[in-house]
Length: 154
Image (tube, rainbow, N blue to C red; front, side, top):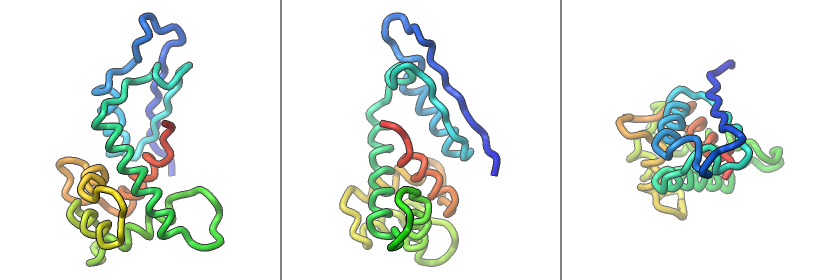
């Protein structure tokens, strides 16, 4: 399905060695992309040329990657092709959605991850998955949010 793409291009010659975007600007673009399902394409001579990454955003991405890794370790089907975290994430979502409503709230994510033996901070993981102000996430949003973070370059 076609989707929105957000392009961020950093000039080749950055004077002063500063990033093209502040951490706040980068976080705003990333949050908009997650909400809309858009892909973000970054182009720069070096990763630090695009944006300064704030510590909160780095923790959020780390928590989302940890969820993706956990999903792959627990829900990857035997004999399935390497890569492609969407299938395991969808299966993890199904395990978290114990009432079968098609949506999970942050509380459901935290309790479900804990019950499944998630090795990291379940509260931080739940906060990373369910955006502030959102009541719950659908399966599609859950898979997109965690999948995009897992595929992000370092």
